[in-house]
Amino acid sequence: MKEQVAVIGLEMHCELKSNSKVFSFARNAYDETPNVNIAPLDMAFPGTLPVVNKKCVEDALKMSMILNCSQPKYMYFDRKNYYYPDLPKGYQITQMSEPVGINGKIEIEVEGKLVPVEIHDIHLEEDSASLDHYFDTSTIDYNRAGVPLLELVTEPCLHNASEAVAFLEHIRDVYRYCGISEADTKKGQIRCDVNVSIKDIDAKELGTRVEIKNVNSFSGVRDAINYEIKRQTELKKQGRYDEVSQDTRRWDEEKMETVHMRSKVDAIDYKYFVEPNIPKYKISKEWLEELRRQIPRLHLERKYDYINNYGLSAYDAGILVKEKDIADYFEECLKLKIDAKVASNWITTQILGYLNKEGLSINDIFINPKRLKDLVDLINDGTISSKQAKEIFMKAMEEKQEIKTYVSSDNAQLSDRDELIKIIDDIISNSPNQVEQYKAGRTNLFDYFVGQVMKNTRGKANPVLTKEILNEKLNN
Ligand code: ADP
Ligand code: MG
Image (cartoon, rainbow, N blue to C red):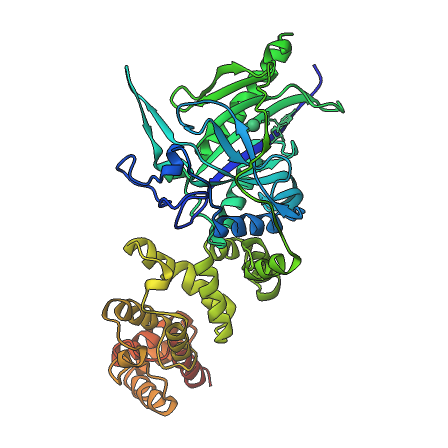
């Protein structure tokens, strides 16, 4: 058998953040109590009409632009007709003929390399209710019915599980940067359909694809892809490739395997037509430009900026851009003229360590960029040592007093040259033996003198200056 390569296409559903649902006034919020966030429309009561949520449309257009898609001239929706208990209207309002974005292309980073990903389309639609199945009953929760969803469909252009997961993480971060969605898989806000096929390495045509429905974690996506590539390759090796047949499967997290659900051969005809209760409306150039201005600088662009223009390591830059608030904090530090590497060090070690320990977000902490600047300035002008700075940092975080209140004559570093010379002269004249031995070649006694200075000054002597003066005194 020839060498096989995998081909993967993703359909990524993400719930959007908004006050109300996409076509009704019901609250868009997760609630432990079922069936509390419902408007008559979500239950398909007769006589109800959809009203489009402007914020959702605007967020969808922003995503379309971020993905470098082209946008339609008019915004409108289609009906996708099918019956299921989680869909009381008997149809889903979605976008089929003119999605909010088509033919996009972006670059993502996979293990340090940029990889292009082609976007087939992105469209705005409503979520269905959620069904829970028990031993002999099922329950329906309509809280989710009508929650805004963006579905992003890639071309079959990904080649392994790492690329697929990197893509999902990239898009998740974009959603968060733009405040369009929390994009939290733990809250079920992201669900993916994963399409996998294999083909001979030199084959022009794609192989038969299998669709794995509703995978709800990124590790699930990774495992499902790896499992499916192996399963299909094995079948092909055994001459049973026809068994791969257009199959719809699901990922069984416990058994760690994909399981057959239904055959895709008889494609369902959804009898799509334009949703008649929502008028078409024009997407003007001005509107798009206004929305484009609201898109913040995204993580990958910032990361390369930090690496190329501020000399940070890819690793540190990666940590800084993980969350927009942290990247914003870092950039605020740059504006205040804190050295980039110094700021990066403080953020990636001291600050993130503190945030993790206390479970806080960077906007909630007392040491804002301005106060960090005060602290760094004190180190730079030799008033305090970096060890002292770390202590002051912790104290100020807890006690919320301005940095300068922690710098008294008590804990200030001793950097006065004349005072240090006096102390060092005393030590030298009181240690004639050590001086003699040092001059005879026992150079490791140098540390003995440093130690004496520290002892005399209770650790406050500026170490650089101390060594400098000792050098002058002992080696001349
Ligand atoms: P459907 O609407 O039935 O899900 P689509 O044609 O819209 O089918 O394709 C959905 C997804 O399947 C897309 O993400 C696409 O990239 C992917 N896909 C299509 N053909 C293949 C294939 N041969 N191998 C892997 N993925 C594929
Ligand atoms: Mg599909």
